[in-house]
Length: 80
View 1 (tube, rainbow, N blue to C red):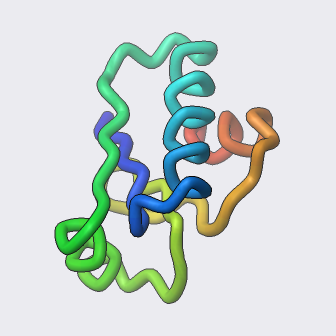
View 2 (view 1 turned 45 degrees about the vertical axis):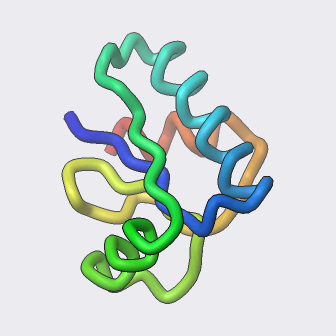
């Protein structure tokens, strides 16, 4: 399983990345959560067809768009 948090690198994106790492840990997912920002992040968002950011992608598919600090919503997205 490949988990990526993709965004501009702003504080909101960084917070989503931190919450996503915690959600993965609580679900027993041992894979690294990648954080893709800047030009690489923009390119990746375009490749995935995202219309806004930040985005959580699992195995190259968008599972969550936008920000939430609700870890249960992120866990649900990761379990899809």
